[in-house]
Image (cartoon, rainbow, N blue to C red; front, side):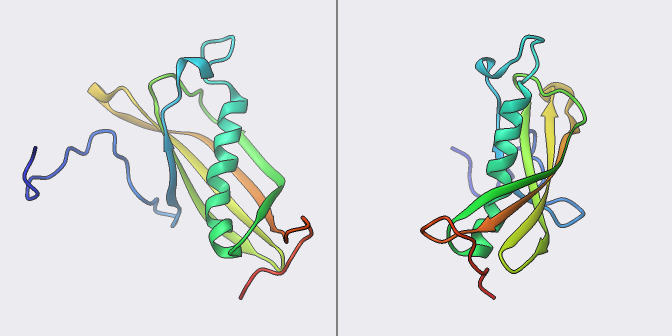
Length: 141
């Protein structure tokens, strides 16, 4: 057990925010079951994680149920590998009457012995606040 005055190791911890104001909303390590036929992480797995990460800030803002209504843009920049520590950063780019659009940046931390941090994905998604019947509702001001 370390004493509380000793700094914790910083390897594989990554920043809690990015220079553009994006905040860390999800961090996960993909497993061997998540690979595609090429041995890289399946794009659908990454898309699902982006949708989860993208929903964090809109859910806070909407103060209730939300639904994904659009994936406006999604770019795979580099493959993700088993063992990468994948961090998802989100920032709100627009709040409308019923919808919220977010930008999600995905960074992978690789090779702990010689740490590299690379951007692997960028996405832009829109969520809509919904009521109990699934109908759009106003976002609280």
